[in-house]
Image (cartoon, rainbow, N blue to C red):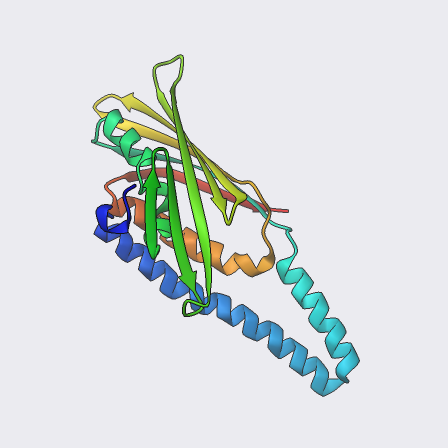
Length: 216
């Protein structure tokens, strides 16, 4: 079973993932500070009971699963379809650079790869697991499906279609989050969108188009 030391992570993409992390963590912390500030402000202006009511409402609003996300992208590369399929089914799928790029530990077992990620100075951790499946479509294109779980719970599905387009390989990607997330996750999503194209480019892919939707 290959571990982190045996897995070659594209260094430029790792650098992008670390820049993402340096931007995301302060923004997430800022959201917590804003919630606490509103609680304290209410307490100073009124009294403890109204402040507690406001605090509970803020926490519920921040954590309530309200937001759904899905998106599409088209990439191109000079690599052959076989090379691309190997990349997406390997331990470092190009679309998951923000997982394997910041992981403390990576283990791969057959078509399943697991990323161990710690945060809050190691006080908390998450385990992200990716299972890949491949098939050939009637048109001859290769299709890869990535099912992502976090701490054993469904998280996202990526459907990747790899085909030949003249002298290049085209990669069409559809992704859907399999669970809704709260408003507290919005800073994370905003920063990820800022760096996603850069992470793909660092791995040798040209981003032809990309579209992401957030909604209730």
